[in-house]
Structures are given as C-alpha cells and as structure tokens.
Image (cartoon, rainbow, N blue to C red; front, side, top):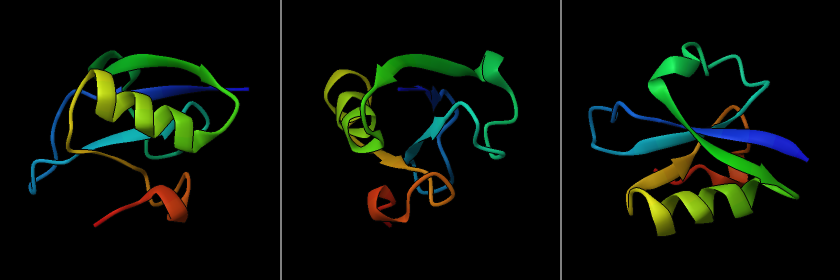
Length: 69
C-alpha cells in the first residue's frame, strides 16, 4: 500500500491534486495533507473528493486513469 497526499494549494483551474508519496511532482510534503495508505490510487483520489475537496483529481504522473482534466 502506498502513502498518498493532497496538495493544499489549488492549481490555476482550482483543482487539487493527489499524489503518491513516490511521485516526483510531490515536491513539498509540508504543503500537503496526508490522505492515508490505500490499496489503490483510485481509492485515495475518491477519499480526497469525499473528505476534502470535491475538485480533487489524481496526478497525471501517478495515474493517467485518475487524472481528470
């Protein structure tokens, strides 16, 4: 299971991006919320939408399937 984080800072389009701990785009962990460990990345993104920001999406670099533009 991978650790997953959500950026506190929204992107220009107001989306919040979730990342796996090993993602190179997760540059500053202090500006991120720890989501937890999940069996799959889609579950982490769903948790982010349900519990934090409805406009959460997956990182293109963590999973193209979970990245919604």
